[in-house]
Image (tube, rainbow, N blue to C red; front, top):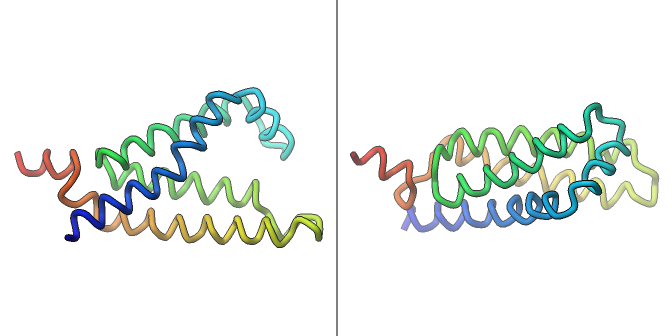
Length: 133
């Protein structure tokens, strides 16, 4: 039962990151522009890094490969993205509530990722298959 719950949790977390990464792939220039709009340096590099983290991290969670590392990288990525892109404390009043909602949603996602950092991928994973050998 715990193995199935762990797998479902990994799939649900990946369901957040994989579409985001794929949308960055199909709309790369828009992603670069959005990153530029908040004043981050090297927006093309940042967009490529975000795309890679979201897609590769999602795939790693889905198959349970290097799950602790993938979850840790996604957690740090999510925290950084939240601070730069959902800064409700600096948002216009008409945007503050939505940005606060998105920020704290991401904090919850980070919590789920940290559980994976702590517990690993459990039974239905490449990590477990490797440990069994």
